[in-house]
Image (spheres, helix red, strand yellow):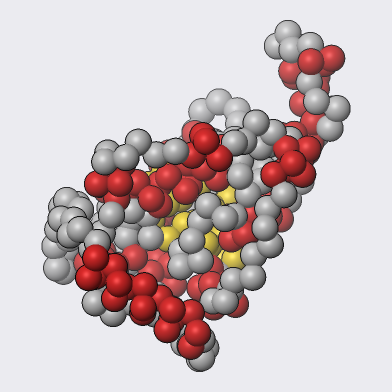
Amino acid sequence: MRLFEAIIDANHRAVAGDASAGLHPADFADNLPVIALTCVDPRLNAFFPNALALPGEQFIWLRNAGNIITGPMSSTMRSLALACAVKGGEEIAIIGHTDCQVAKTTTVALLEKLKSLGVDRSRLPDNLSEFFGTFGSERQNVIKACDFVRSSPLIGPKIPVHGLMLDIETGKLDWVVNGYTALAASVQPTMPKLDFAALGAAGSSKDFEMGEMKFPEMKIGEAAVKPLPSQPPQVRIVGTPVVEAPEATSGQVAQFAEKNWPKVPPPTLPPLKKKSPPPPTIQPRPKFPGKY
Ligand SMILES: [Zn+2]
């Protein structure tokens, strides 16, 4: 069972009342930490990372209103890319939730609210829905976000990108996009070259310049680089044949890197304890005062 399959299995058992449901993070050390993008809804504070049966130090949490990604080069996308490169995130999950207030807000209502806050309509873009990435379906929003992440040139083809939906009443997690399946389908990526001018016209990456992506050398890289294994990692999908050409190429690259790259000490994450106790079980949501 792969990491998120085990997570969903443990989650479902916990929601069904199994007080011992959980998973052993040490069994998935190669797939941790995970990066999760969720909504800012404060009701979610009580659920994460418990709903995934993960310890806090293996859960990199990004949040924005509506867990929206507006494009393959958007600001949130850049944060996801940095979280992979700098913090060593191994898998990405976009986690929507039921009863999301962003989904319930119409453009007219949003305009009214902004107006009441003193925002001048004439200074806003014409197409507010496109600009903010607002949506009517929580599931469709997660699917769209996964598509953007999967197709983004900022995310390598080896990172699984999952889409999940959290039931805010029960804490139950369900698949929306199985990132392992999508990963298998894109083993041989055929990504089109991005048209930066067109991206600018779409709004979210108007001011993007490659110069912005310069990393301060000898700082970020030191923490992020892991020693390459002697054998290149394989994409293992049950029932899916391994594509030969990319593996052969990556093998040559790995051999060259083994020989020529300076050795970097491994990252200093605390070692995972074998057979560590399961994390706290998932609780039905507490009663939240106030409106959301
Ligand atoms: Zn929400």
